[in-house]
Image (cartoon, rainbow, N blue to C red; front, side, top):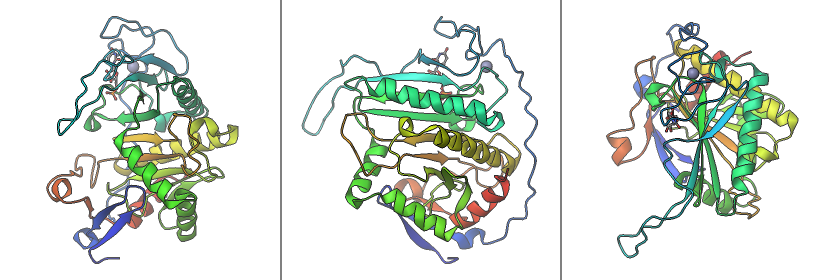
Length: 331
Ligand code: H2U
Ligand code: ZN
């Protein structure tokens, strides 16, 4: 697998170039401990800390586990009013509800530093939001995500994520849904079985969930998190599966942090069954982690040039990325 080759992304139907000879060398860098966090547990300037004023005037209440509020600067509004046009200049109105979720009242924590029991409460809140927003008749899709770190555009280090419920299924999940439906049975159940058999791309696992570097990963340390059992959405997870997901999230994110001794930036999010009332039996719940770092805390991968104009490309192989992450994600 050292020669340049291309790999097929079964979830998107797109090809990826792999050029491992460019960095065909074993990892000799140091594995650093996570740098001590220098943030205070409470920051009077932070709009997400309990009791503080937010930019638009609302007050974040005193909360002691998770806290969800409507985004004060929402990208979408629940009322349909946008322009509509056809032909080559096609446009449609789009409705949505955008929320922010604080994972924990403590300003200095991140998922990686939180107790598994506290992450479990985040999982429960994600599931509850999926149900609540998905029950709104016009909401067809609930996208849960987290931007972590300034490099990924996060506006604040306080542990938080976002939830966007939309009238239409967005492009990325729509691509993956079409691929999973075209496959028939469950693409990701079959793929997970292949990966568990191979073993070399598995990062960490427990009785309920598996984190792996997908065979077709484009970002250097991209991972896919999957329930072992076929589940279509977060609300379908029972207690044991929610605990299992919390455990995997803690191990994976703390493993990321140990890689370069910094809070590893990423965008992560869940892809789950649309909420339009159709059954979608082929869809398998999963989370994607897309971290940009490549060689150090400051050297990131850019998706530019050939990637932007041709197709995605990577240097280190998914197998070597998995090997490093596996060593760092042990309990
Ligand atoms: P990000 O860090 O992922 O950008 O998420 C923070 C969100 O919080 C962002 O979308 C919102 C921003 O609009 N926000 C508020 O709702 N109220 C505020 O007082 C500041 C930021
Ligand atoms: Zn804060």
